[in-house]
Image 1 (cartoon, rainbow, N blue to C red):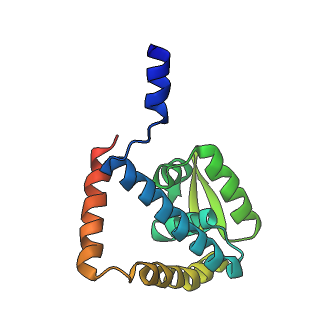
Image 2: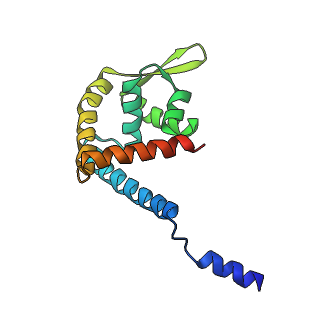
Length: 150
């Protein structure tokens, strides 16, 4: 009987606000990510590549480890992204001792100057359905949640 009860409990979806919020957040993220991917395609960039360029452009001289932490990915993932961006001439690694520091090339700077404002406009437009006060409330709520999580 315990097995039947356990199976029945597993099959019952939890309709708690936390679970529903998490599912909705994931859905919204996927929609924004899909719109971003489509938007970045004319520049020949993926969302992950854009994230690298935006991070390096905002803080040149980052180490690969610092970039991985900012992007919440592994160092291996960052290495693959950087290999591709370096190959097409957008990013360069400069060795400083045992650390690779990251910098945009001139071509990378021009691309970032073009694509970052355009991507920002896209995101602002996607969130424009919410009044400014609701956007600020959403930001505050997500910030509190982000800081509370390990």
